[in-house]
Image 1 (cartoon, rainbow, N blue to C red):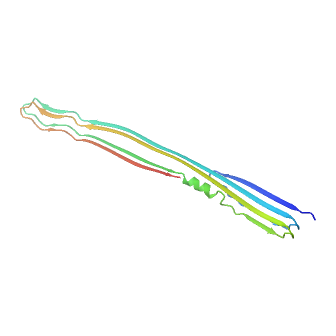
Image 2 (cartoon, rainbow, N blue to C red):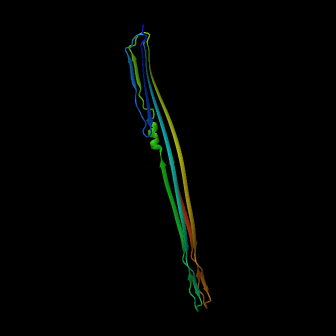
Image 3 (cartoon, rainbow, N blue to C red):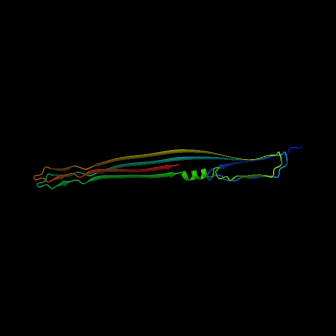
Length: 194
């Protein structure tokens, strides 16, 4: 008696870059002869590679200077008051950076080999026959995240008030020097989600 050999093989390779590949395989072995060998094999291979290169940099160079002049009351019979003004610097640096790569990554992983609804049936086989349906699904995921964040804030401030002088007067007034003030505020908010 002749031995009947039936063999079918299907190989599917999917490359998922952004949304993944999802598919279903279906096979049926029906009404086989006696002493026959019938095989169906499905191979699904998915490879996903995600690389995120995030480079965030912020540089702030803020030199500030504030000066007031001198106030002199001198060589008077009756001298008045000498008052200098105020010198003030106010600097604010606010950085808010947000990088989110999780959305595209989840899409890739969601369809990478997980959406298969494979189905196989074997019916009405002959006596002493060998019948086989195999599904082989393989998934490989490689994720590389390179994150670099650099913030440089160069804030040089100078504030000075001038001299207030009352001298060489018969009757001298008051000498008042103004205020010198520096204010520097830095606000940073950096978020990276992969």
